[in-house]
Length: 158
Ligand code: ATP
Ligand code: MG
Image (cartoon, rainbow, N blue to C red):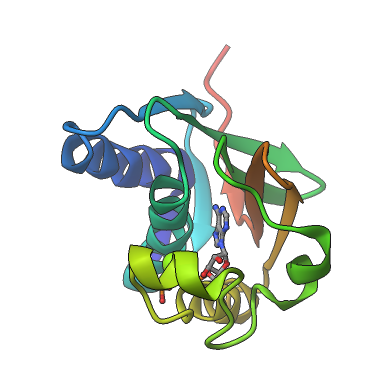
């Protein structure tokens, strides 16, 4: 179906904001106001964004800020989720989208999870003709981004 990407992202972040009220986590958004229509499966795209944002929350320190941006780049929307968490060591980055892969076994076990979230996120992004990637500085934070083709950018009437 047709999904208004900015509204969709805002909706998901609203939900995370409510569910993390008790944690000292701040969400900051840079999301355009005008509609940008994306063709896709709403439940799957929700799972894609959920998996990335839930990681950002899970691997963030208390008092951390999570920045969410939505941009239009070369006929695609790019959604980025940037956290101030532990980061991912360089040598582990090529593997984070693998099934059951977890960077620090001990730490990850304490935080819970199966190591499937990112593999599923990647599958969904690819199935929608998009992509997913990560950049991270060990100890400083991590940015996960995904792109999706959009069908139509509705420009507000002048
Ligand atoms: P699940 O998502 O299945 O509950 P998980 O979060 O451990 O478990 P993934 O979401 O696939 O699994 O992430 C894989 C691994 O990548 C994580 O175990 C963690 O080590 C690392 N990782 C993912 N996101 C971040 C992040 N934002 N900051 C630091 N490390 C991360
Ligand atoms: Mg996860």
